[in-house]
Amino acid sequence: MGKLKITCEEATTICTKAQYGEASFLDKFKLNLHFVYCKTCRTFSRQNSELSDMCALAKKYQEKHKCCLSEADKKAWKEKMKELEK
Amino acid sequence: MQENKVHTLDPDKWIDAYADYLFNYTIARVNDTEKAKDLVQETFFAGLKSMKNFEGKASERTWLVSILKRKIIDHYRKINSNKGKAEVRMNFYQEGDREGDWLEERVPQKWDSSADAMIESEELGEALTACIQKLPEKYRMVFEMKTIQGFETEDICNELDITSSNLWVIIHRARTQLRRCMEDNWFKK
Image 1: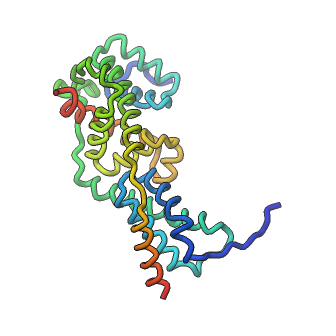
Image 2: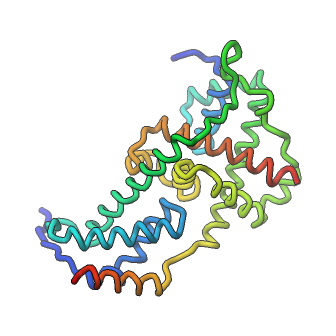
Image 3: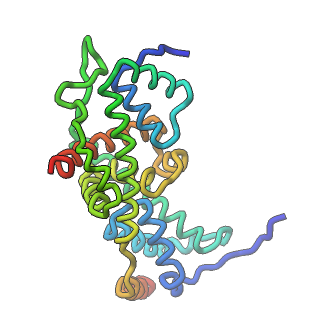
Protein backbone atom coordinates (compact mmCIF):
# COMPACT_ATOMS: atom_id res chain seq x y z
CA MET A 1 0.00 0.00 0.00
CA GLY A 2 3.01 2.30 0.43
CA LYS A 3 3.32 5.26 2.72
CA LEU A 4 0.41 7.60 3.13
CA LYS A 5 2.40 10.73 3.87
CA ILE A 6 3.64 12.34 0.71
CA THR A 7 5.87 15.33 -0.12
CA CYS A 8 4.64 18.49 -1.82
CA GLU A 9 6.38 17.40 -4.98
CA GLU A 10 4.47 14.12 -5.01
CA ALA A 11 1.26 15.92 -4.08
CA THR A 12 1.50 18.35 -6.99
CA THR A 13 2.27 15.55 -9.43
CA ILE A 14 -0.83 13.64 -8.31
CA CYS A 15 -2.78 16.87 -8.52
CA THR A 16 -1.80 17.27 -12.16
CA LYS A 17 -2.77 13.69 -13.00
CA ALA A 18 -6.10 14.32 -11.30
CA GLN A 19 -6.70 17.23 -13.67
CA TYR A 20 -6.83 14.69 -16.48
CA GLY A 21 -8.90 12.24 -14.46
CA GLU A 22 -5.99 9.82 -14.25
CA ALA A 23 -5.10 9.74 -10.55
CA SER A 24 -5.83 6.47 -8.77
CA PHE A 25 -8.17 6.25 -5.80
CA LEU A 26 -5.25 5.73 -3.40
CA ASP A 27 -3.39 8.68 -4.91
CA LYS A 28 -6.39 10.92 -4.42
CA PHE A 29 -6.71 9.73 -0.83
CA LYS A 30 -3.07 10.57 -0.14
CA LEU A 31 -3.56 13.94 -1.82
CA ASN A 32 -6.56 14.84 0.34
CA LEU A 33 -4.68 13.76 3.44
CA HIS A 34 -1.83 16.05 2.40
CA PHE A 35 -4.26 18.94 1.92
CA VAL A 36 -5.32 18.65 5.58
CA TYR A 37 -2.02 20.11 6.72
CA CYS A 38 -0.60 21.81 3.61
CA LYS A 39 -2.18 25.10 2.63
CA THR A 40 0.34 25.74 -0.16
CA CYS A 41 -0.64 22.62 -2.03
CA ARG A 42 -4.31 23.45 -1.52
CA THR A 43 -3.65 26.76 -3.24
CA PHE A 44 -1.70 25.00 -5.96
CA SER A 45 -4.52 22.55 -6.48
CA ARG A 46 -7.17 25.25 -6.78
CA GLN A 47 -5.03 27.15 -9.26
CA ASN A 48 -4.30 23.97 -11.16
CA SER A 49 -8.03 23.62 -11.83
CA GLU A 50 -8.13 27.22 -12.96
CA LEU A 51 -5.22 26.48 -15.26
CA SER A 52 -7.25 23.65 -16.78
CA ASP A 53 -10.10 26.10 -17.41
CA MET A 54 -7.63 28.40 -19.11
CA CYS A 55 -6.40 25.50 -21.24
CA ALA A 56 -9.94 25.06 -22.49
CA LEU A 57 -9.91 28.73 -23.49
CA ALA A 58 -6.55 28.29 -25.20
CA LYS A 59 -8.02 25.36 -27.09
CA LYS A 60 -10.94 27.49 -28.25
CA TYR A 61 -8.58 30.26 -29.23
CA GLN A 62 -6.36 27.90 -31.21
CA GLU A 63 -9.29 26.33 -33.01
CA LYS A 64 -10.53 29.73 -34.04
CA HIS A 65 -7.12 30.74 -35.38
CA LYS A 66 -6.24 27.43 -36.91
CA CYS A 67 -4.16 27.62 -40.01
CA CYS A 68 -4.56 25.42 -42.98
CA LEU A 69 -2.96 24.37 -46.20
CA SER A 70 -3.23 26.86 -49.01
CA GLU A 71 -3.81 26.00 -52.65
CA ALA A 72 -0.40 27.55 -53.32
CA ASP A 73 1.24 24.99 -51.01
CA LYS A 74 -0.44 22.16 -52.85
CA LYS A 75 0.48 23.54 -56.24
CA ALA A 76 4.13 23.85 -55.22
CA TRP A 77 4.14 20.26 -53.95
CA LYS A 78 2.60 18.97 -57.16
CA GLU A 79 5.33 20.63 -59.18
CA LYS A 80 8.07 19.20 -56.97
CA MET A 81 6.49 15.76 -57.21
CA LYS A 82 6.54 15.98 -60.99
CA GLU A 83 10.24 16.90 -60.87
CA LEU A 84 11.01 13.96 -58.64
CA GLU A 85 9.03 11.53 -60.73
CA LYS A 86 11.23 12.15 -63.74
CA MET B 1 -12.59 -13.76 -44.14
CA GLN B 2 -10.83 -10.65 -45.22
CA GLU B 3 -10.81 -9.72 -48.82
CA ASN B 4 -7.36 -9.83 -50.33
CA LYS B 5 -7.65 -6.71 -52.35
CA VAL B 6 -4.38 -5.47 -53.80
CA HIS B 7 -4.00 -1.73 -53.54
CA THR B 8 -2.12 0.38 -56.01
CA LEU B 9 -0.37 3.71 -55.85
CA ASP B 10 -1.14 6.72 -57.95
CA PRO B 11 1.18 9.55 -56.86
CA ASP B 12 -0.29 12.07 -59.31
CA LYS B 13 -3.43 12.11 -57.22
CA TRP B 14 -1.81 12.10 -53.79
CA ILE B 15 -1.78 15.84 -53.16
CA ASP B 16 -5.44 16.37 -54.01
CA ALA B 17 -6.57 13.25 -52.23
CA TYR B 18 -4.47 13.24 -49.07
CA ALA B 19 -2.70 16.58 -48.48
CA ASP B 20 -5.45 17.99 -46.24
CA TYR B 21 -5.92 14.75 -44.37
CA LEU B 22 -2.22 14.34 -43.67
CA PHE B 23 -1.85 18.00 -42.73
CA ASN B 24 -4.69 17.80 -40.21
CA TYR B 25 -3.21 14.60 -38.82
CA THR B 26 0.12 16.37 -38.37
CA ILE B 27 -1.11 19.68 -36.99
CA ALA B 28 -2.94 17.81 -34.22
CA ARG B 29 0.43 16.48 -33.11
CA VAL B 30 2.91 19.13 -34.17
CA ASN B 31 1.16 22.39 -33.51
CA ASP B 32 3.40 24.43 -35.76
CA THR B 33 2.09 25.17 -39.23
CA GLU B 34 5.45 25.42 -40.98
CA LYS B 35 6.84 22.30 -39.34
CA ALA B 36 3.65 20.40 -40.16
CA LYS B 37 3.87 21.42 -43.82
CA ASP B 38 7.50 20.27 -43.94
CA LEU B 39 6.61 16.88 -42.49
CA VAL B 40 3.75 16.34 -44.95
CA GLN B 41 5.90 17.37 -47.87
CA GLU B 42 8.67 15.01 -46.76
CA THR B 43 6.10 12.24 -46.46
CA PHE B 44 4.99 12.63 -50.08
CA PHE B 45 8.56 12.69 -51.33
CA ALA B 46 9.56 9.72 -49.21
CA GLY B 47 6.50 7.86 -50.48
CA LEU B 48 7.50 8.55 -54.03
CA LYS B 49 11.02 7.29 -53.41
CA SER B 50 9.92 4.09 -51.76
CA MET B 51 7.06 3.20 -54.08
CA LYS B 52 8.80 0.00 -55.04
CA ASN B 53 8.50 -1.18 -51.42
CA PHE B 54 4.72 -0.88 -51.47
CA GLU B 55 3.21 -4.33 -51.30
CA GLY B 56 -0.39 -3.37 -51.82
CA LYS B 57 -1.54 -4.83 -48.51
CA ALA B 58 -2.67 -1.52 -47.04
CA SER B 59 -4.55 1.27 -48.69
CA GLU B 60 -2.61 4.12 -50.20
CA ARG B 61 -3.66 6.44 -47.39
CA THR B 62 -2.75 4.01 -44.61
CA TRP B 63 0.63 3.54 -46.21
CA LEU B 64 1.27 7.28 -46.41
CA VAL B 65 0.15 7.73 -42.80
CA SER B 66 2.63 5.09 -41.68
CA ILE B 67 5.42 7.04 -43.38
CA LEU B 68 4.17 10.24 -41.76
CA LYS B 69 4.09 8.60 -38.33
CA ARG B 70 7.76 7.76 -38.63
CA LYS B 71 8.50 11.35 -39.66
CA ILE B 72 6.67 12.63 -36.59
CA ILE B 73 8.51 10.34 -34.21
CA ASP B 74 11.83 11.32 -35.83
CA HIS B 75 10.87 14.93 -35.27
CA TYR B 76 10.06 14.22 -31.63
CA ARG B 77 13.35 12.40 -31.10
CA LYS B 78 15.24 15.26 -32.66
CA ILE B 79 13.70 17.92 -30.44
CA ASN B 80 14.05 15.60 -27.49
CA SER B 81 17.80 15.27 -27.91
CA ASN B 82 18.46 18.91 -28.88
CA LYS B 83 16.49 20.58 -26.17
CA GLY B 84 17.18 17.88 -23.63
CA LYS B 85 20.77 18.94 -23.31
CA ALA B 86 20.19 22.66 -23.12
CA GLU B 87 17.22 22.35 -20.82
CA VAL B 88 17.58 23.84 -17.37
CA ARG B 89 15.90 21.73 -14.77
CA MET B 90 13.74 24.14 -12.79
CA ASN B 91 13.65 23.26 -9.17
CA PHE B 92 10.49 23.85 -7.24
CA TYR B 93 11.14 21.63 -4.29
CA GLN B 94 13.75 21.38 -1.57
CA GLU B 95 16.39 18.76 -1.25
CA GLY B 96 17.94 17.32 1.90
CA ASP B 97 16.01 17.39 5.19
CA ARG B 98 12.88 18.93 3.76
CA GLU B 99 13.06 17.04 0.50
CA GLY B 100 10.01 17.51 -1.67
CA ASP B 101 8.67 20.55 0.17
CA TRP B 102 8.06 23.80 -1.67
CA LEU B 103 11.01 26.14 -2.15
CA GLU B 104 10.15 29.49 -0.61
CA GLU B 105 10.50 31.44 -3.88
CA ARG B 106 8.51 28.86 -5.83
CA VAL B 107 5.40 28.89 -3.65
CA PRO B 108 2.32 29.60 -5.80
CA GLN B 109 1.52 33.30 -5.97
CA LYS B 110 -1.88 34.68 -5.24
CA TRP B 111 -3.86 34.96 -8.46
CA ASP B 112 -5.95 38.04 -8.93
CA SER B 113 -9.57 37.05 -8.40
CA SER B 114 -10.62 39.21 -11.33
CA ALA B 115 -9.52 36.15 -13.28
CA ASP B 116 -12.99 34.82 -12.59
CA ALA B 117 -14.54 37.66 -14.52
CA MET B 118 -12.08 37.18 -17.35
CA ILE B 119 -12.51 33.46 -17.58
CA GLU B 120 -14.61 33.70 -20.74
CA SER B 121 -12.37 36.11 -22.51
CA GLU B 122 -10.56 35.40 -25.70
CA GLU B 123 -7.53 37.35 -24.47
CA LEU B 124 -6.96 34.83 -21.73
CA GLY B 125 -6.93 32.01 -24.26
CA GLU B 126 -4.52 34.01 -26.36
CA ALA B 127 -2.23 34.75 -23.40
CA LEU B 128 -2.03 31.10 -22.45
CA THR B 129 -1.43 30.11 -26.07
CA ALA B 130 1.51 32.52 -26.12
CA CYS B 131 2.87 30.88 -22.96
CA ILE B 132 2.45 27.43 -24.53
CA GLN B 133 4.48 28.61 -27.53
CA LYS B 134 7.34 29.49 -25.19
CA LEU B 135 7.60 25.98 -23.75
CA PRO B 136 10.56 23.84 -24.79
CA GLU B 137 9.39 22.09 -27.94
CA LYS B 138 9.15 18.55 -26.57
CA TYR B 139 7.14 19.80 -23.58
CA ARG B 140 4.88 21.73 -25.92
CA MET B 141 4.30 18.75 -28.17
CA VAL B 142 3.38 16.36 -25.34
CA PHE B 143 1.38 18.99 -23.44
CA GLU B 144 -0.66 19.95 -26.49
CA MET B 145 -1.36 16.40 -27.55
CA LYS B 146 -2.66 15.67 -24.07
CA THR B 147 -4.37 18.92 -23.13
CA ILE B 148 -5.40 20.68 -26.34
CA GLN B 149 -5.92 17.76 -28.70
CA GLY B 150 -7.14 15.44 -25.96
CA PHE B 151 -5.25 12.30 -26.94
CA GLU B 152 -5.26 9.33 -24.57
CA THR B 153 -2.11 8.90 -22.48
CA GLU B 154 -1.54 5.46 -23.95
CA ASP B 155 -1.76 6.71 -27.53
CA ILE B 156 0.75 9.49 -26.91
CA CYS B 157 3.16 7.07 -25.23
CA ASN B 158 2.89 4.66 -28.16
CA GLU B 159 3.29 7.30 -30.81
CA LEU B 160 6.23 9.05 -29.21
CA ASP B 161 7.74 5.93 -27.66
CA ILE B 162 7.84 7.28 -24.10
CA THR B 163 6.70 5.77 -20.80
CA SER B 164 3.65 7.08 -18.97
CA SER B 165 5.71 8.24 -15.99
CA ASN B 166 7.84 10.11 -18.50
CA LEU B 167 4.71 11.70 -19.91
CA TRP B 168 3.46 12.83 -16.51
CA VAL B 169 6.80 14.39 -15.61
CA ILE B 170 6.70 16.35 -18.87
CA ILE B 171 3.06 17.41 -18.41
CA HIS B 172 3.69 18.42 -14.83
CA ARG B 173 6.77 20.49 -15.71
CA ALA B 174 5.00 22.06 -18.65
CA ARG B 175 2.09 23.10 -16.43
CA THR B 176 4.46 24.45 -13.80
CA GLN B 177 6.19 26.59 -16.41
CA LEU B 178 2.83 27.75 -17.74
CA ARG B 179 1.82 28.88 -14.24
CA ARG B 180 4.98 30.95 -13.94
CA CYS B 181 4.46 32.42 -17.38
CA MET B 182 0.84 33.35 -16.60
CA GLU B 183 1.85 34.80 -13.23
CA ASP B 184 4.40 37.02 -14.99
CA ASN B 185 2.28 38.00 -17.98
CA TRP B 186 -1.30 37.90 -16.89
CA PHE B 187 -1.86 38.01 -13.16
CA LYS B 188 0.72 40.69 -12.48
CA LYS B 189 -1.01 43.29 -14.64
